[in-house]
Length: 407
Image 1 (cartoon, rainbow, N blue to C red):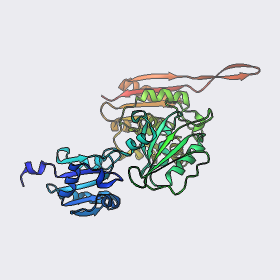
Image 2 (cartoon, one colour; image 1 turned 90 degrees about the vertical axis):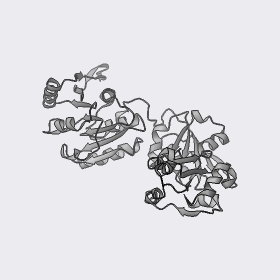
Image 3 (cartoon, helix red, strand yellow; image 1 turned 45 degrees about the horizontal axis):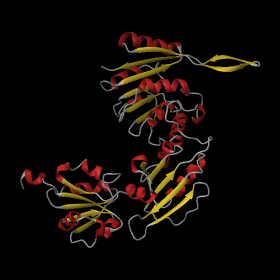
Image 4 (cartoon, helix red, strand yellow; image 1 turned 60 degrees about the horizontal axis):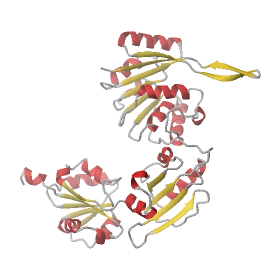
């Protein structure tokens, strides 16, 4: 077979709904009928039947099927997917393996579009999320009073778990709507408040609509950095809120970047970094086992369960980690090799920020500033405290901050 023939579309991805073949356009039906092999889940294959082609259900893990799929290059092959294959579907994953000019895609109406049509919500004004195969705490940063969320769920137990999470965070007045098996004969729609949520026998195929309502006392993760210190479980090793907000600004997060948080303490910098955007990743490096476990708990509670925690002392614990775009050193800057290892690991154009409160740490940063340049700041914060029946300023320990960009 010639190279030109191989580059012709041979793989078709067909999005299918609960209405089965009746909801497919003629081109999608022709692709199914002309394929020699059709991949899909059992439900997809049943909805698309009868099939003249060989049908294969996805293995677990699904990636085990990819070598066989790629071995069919040049032969008519079809993949069945739910709704829109490129909206939290298999499409994006397959597109990393097969060039776009070798595929044809026929998307179906997504669950999000169907849900908005049922609820009368504007799709552009609704946050569209997925918990399918993902940790429940990922929802936490999106729980903003007044927000409308649509969530793809894991199974019939997810709505109840979401209701419990809302209650725990003081958002029990939120309204949940469970949309089951949309677009087919089994479709059903039911609503309940998070307080007293009692819907039972929920179809595993469901999408959850959430109208978030919170009291003034609700625990809502703000959109700005500088979370209340009390929100972090800690043993005193915590970058305090005011300094943390300035430090996040100094780190200047950009979409898709990876942060190393060395000497992470309670993990507050890593957590606030990841809260700035869903594409940001962070690796918290902490030598103390109790603190490392505490970081993981804080991350889970504050909505960034994907924070990676590496337990071990720097610089040894830094070996083999993904290349960082940005590095924060909050502890251990006086340990021999830590700063040099961080500088060497940083990608070109990457940014390093280090905070210290000790004279010894300041001496290290003064030397780095003299030798490498960058910017050096002294940060001091004072809070009003009672002095008898009056008030006066009580200052926290000043923080010396060095920021540097690798050229």
